[in-house]
Length: 255
Image (cartoon, rainbow, N blue to C red; front, side, top):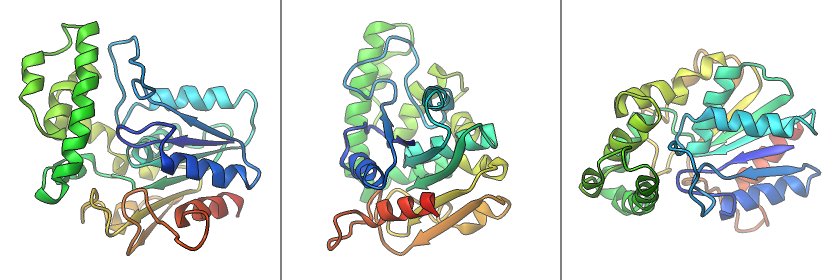
């Protein structure tokens, strides 16, 4: 069983998720692609939402899969990559999880968040903020005491959203506390199963701090491959039917 975790404001129906699922299914793997809280076009009932460190939800999915599978492989994209790596660091060698692959991994959340607030990433951040605010308004309708709605309308960056919404709702003091406690870079050393990180130099969301192999220097089970091209969750192959990253993950799990 391959479990696929999507990126920020994504879902199990995104092209990159379905492509990765199809690539593995055609090679004999069963696949489970899951939606984070509020990402299935239906708002969840509890006050909490999803975030980069919500590993308790991934743990629930893995435990569900283990009822029927004794070999489990994890794939995470972007936010899902950070989530997957943090989960592995917390759990160590966890039951039937054999290998993992993290693609477009924002290993340092603060660095990545601030990088979104640069001119070249203006359109990306604007798109994220539009859907995040929509979900936050729906959550406020359920729980008006969670945060000040007027303050929500006055913020325009992911950092400010995390400071006002993500951090306090999920038990963190502020955005800085959230980033420090949930960044995958702080969990890599504790990972105890073969894990591959795949990032691209031309990924618009990643920074020099993230694209630095020394970040995995003390991780005995983590390999970090940085390619010149590939974009964010990309790696298109215009000749083959599958993306290069899809073939990469399949070959890694089968090797």
